[in-house]
Length: 118
Image (tube, rainbow, N blue to C red):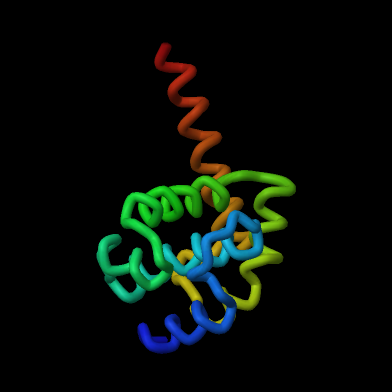
């Protein structure tokens, strides 16, 4: 997909509006990640597409990673809300069950190694 397709999606779903509704915010987070990693855009270029300043995009980009690495309700809700946007704009690191489990195992192993070092 190209930037014009993303723009149409943003406009259609009103992701440019100033709101803290979870349905809008999670889709924004997903698209920040997509635009940064797939379209290779800079934060400063992404921000105006959503009527935001670039620090908001940086924070949302980081929040995406935190949600994807979480367990339970937050991750389930994120997947449900972003199901349509992830269908149209797939990430190579999309939060599939296999990738999530791999991340969790990796962090558990790192946590065990850090405890054994102390």
